[in-house]
Image (cartoon, rainbow over all chains, first blue to last red; front, side, top):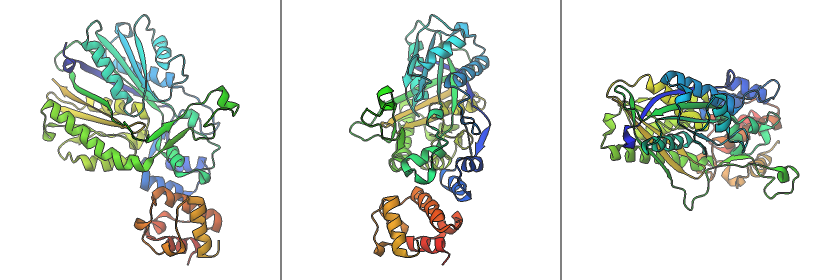
Length: 348
Length: 75
């Protein structure tokens, strides 16, 4: 069947722990009011949820925990039984382990077996990439229902002993930007009336010859022993200036391309789901998009930047708002190696 | 840190910005590489060095390194 007829039945999400506001975060790191004021003004993210217990420093929630909860919510909202899922696709930059893949841990917990499962190594465009793999698997025939999951947990990078006064800006920014979370969605090839069609999905690598905007390294036994090259490098670092400069323009290009491919005008859009970098950056991007007549669906102020999961928080909200004939566009940019991603929805 | 020259050294050494004493009066917009994260890093360094608490709104009104120094030392 035509991929543009694949339906998005539901989305579900999960967050660990209570919301952590900027005052709490600042105090936990021994920082003062000035630091908290700076996050308010320059990051614009009010809260995030963390898989780490801030009192004990222990990781209390795994990515599999979050993915399982999100998947159960999505399945319940879709009215789909786990036994009816034919394929699972997951995206994450922060799996619980490199092997086994977290997608298979989640499948096991859901009682799912004997179906193909895929896990993508992905960042902020991961939800869109996973949606597209699931959508194409259904369009290709042989599968009827796909469960798509995406999420991230920065617990292993959240060093509560770090002296933030001595961190370089490229690392400091990560402490305030990120949160943990997971999302899931159910896709189907059943074209039931009144459901939401996933009209278009685009995901494209655009980073040829370009330095990464974000790097997340991983370390093994030789690294632990201090023998491997690069052991002194930061586990996570961002070229935040390149991101600030490039992402608004890339988002505008993605929007234009999606609209053009569908022969939609920007005034046809009822909702827009912009990239969720931080409260402040998302506001800048939205200003650049200039979609005055479309309602913006934004979550990053409350969830923090939870990477792969973000689009599902936006999808969960917009699915409850889309009326018959309404249209929405979602946009994501992965600055790691500069991936453009986006999707278009329409309720029939 | 008691002089503006020591302040310039702090900016050079801790922020890695290539500034000279002649740059302190320039608008921050003219300082190559300057951004809001440098403001945060510098402000926390100044609080530690001077022992004085700073308020972000005061620093946001300071549009040059010279003015930030003045806020930090209470001049």
